[in-house]
Amino acid sequence: MKMSSPTLIFKKRPIVYLQGEPLLLWNWQQEQQTLLEILEDKQVRIFSECRSGFCGACRTKIRSGAVQYVIEPLAELAADECLPCCCIPSEDLDLELSSEGAEMPPVYQHSYG
Image 1 (tube, rainbow, N blue to C red):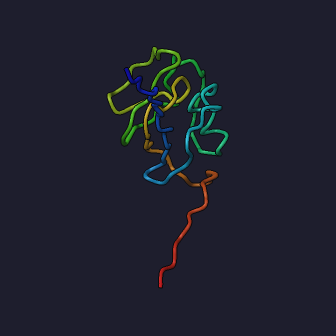
Image 2 (tube, helix red, strand yellow):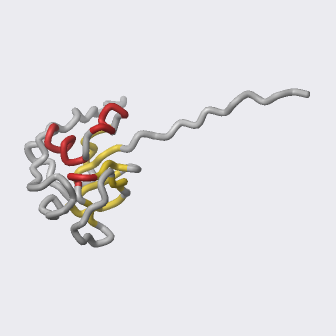
């Protein structure tokens, strides 16, 4: 009888975008931080107050993608909103936040010819 080798399953790390512009590739070390903390580290302008999903001050519109809550929010949210203070991306995530002033990755342009 021939035994099959185990199959490894890799989950793609989510990319976080700001209005379609890539901000970062979410890495596993960042799992200990909320989306709000990472956005602040990248100098993204976002208002926040409580950091526990209660007040809703950091309410952010999701253009596409999904989040996973590490603390279930108490503030009421629309289907296309998240509270970055208490969530992490669960898939590629495009947020309705400005990239102005944020630490964006360099964009590489290829010249062909």
